[in-house]
Length: 325
Image 1 (tube, rainbow, N blue to C red):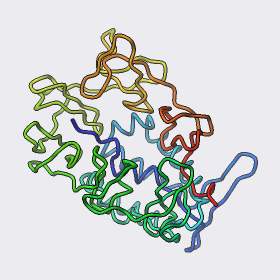
Image 2: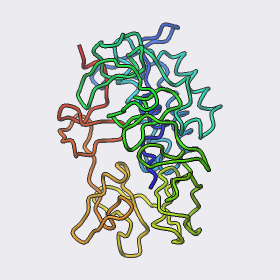
Image 3: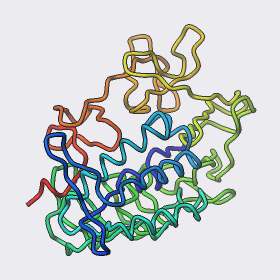
Image 4: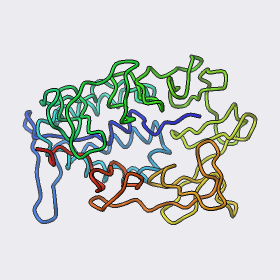
């Protein structure tokens, strides 16, 4: 089965931010109504458009639409723009935008858009809250509010966070938490140690094969979170996921003639199994969508936060260095 929730593009998009600019840009902060929009953050729409091009179902499941994605990323960008030493200047954001426009979806899936691998001013071992602050390009928070700048891992290195951000360019973090080169169509693969690029899946013969469109005959069992298609086994008919809001039914067979459904936002994790549910291809057959916790609300490690936020020190927060000394 293929897991693509940690698409490189999603990592780039959720990490979009800007610092006090060295090329003439500024960071503005509002008064009682909260932070203003940081310089460069208005380009978040371009990131959302690329997400819609390469992974339309992830866009729908994570944000609803381009407008919802843009609003969420502008908020994350403005929050992270206050981080000390951030390397995300307006010029760098524009360079990333241009690179994404020229990049193929395989470049994005394979963590191969170097212009979007930002590096800050803080040296290795320095306290940080998000990766844009570090000259290594990675802040190892280990699920805490603050962490330290750490080197990105080479091929074969571990990536405990599960994020591609922890791996060197052109490597992805596998479900086995190892930095690896993703498998191309027809190449060797293993779900835990060498996942296939999005749009492909790892067959029982350990070879990357193309996924199919909804309604076509399945070549094997997988979930493609890029376009929202799935197969429960070889020769079954490929299905298409729908989306549901909190409180609504979800799962592979939610009943009442409804199609297989994931929760938006939250995807698989937000679909809480009901008593009559069993698990197939890593998903409950029948569940109910849990309500994501808003930013600033209390949470536990099993809680679902809004897209782009994490449960940090018991609160749903957008990772940011401004909270760290």
